[in-house]
Image 1 (cartoon, helix red, strand yellow):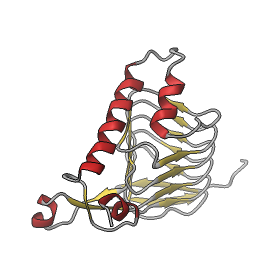
Image 2: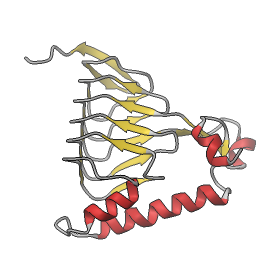
Image 3: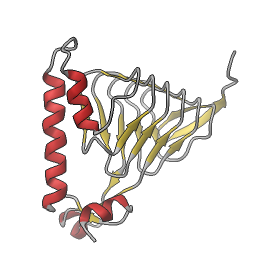
Image 4: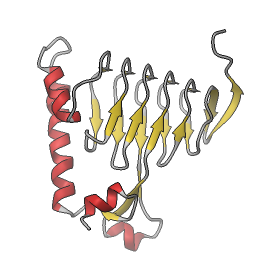
Length: 188
């Protein structure tokens, strides 16, 4: 099994020394550089973004620069998603962002984690678990979402929160770690 296959299965994999993994991250880094270097009104931005994500750009997707991805194709955006400046998608485990989700500035979605013991960490080992965000969510500024988290439809995550566990749909969550503060009654 390749290191990339291990990564996609959520198993320990060599994230720091495997040539295939390093090549894919370098490709994403170069494409992020290209995207972030273009003027906001440059018609080439859509083509660069399509190469980065390896898909047709979803309708209504807005990604303000700078934005960063570890891989690119492992992040999937729904329609009408807005991503503010300075966001990072550490997408080795896969990230799904539902339709009409708004992501504030400087948010991070982190699917990878390292072993606690330094022997394995120094070998470049890590694992990645998927992050899934439902539709119609809103993330305030500087939110961090940790590996393996699922956030239900209609959630609001308050600025500065660190989401370490699943959040049920229609919840307002806040804090470090984020906890549900109240249920949101939609349509009010």
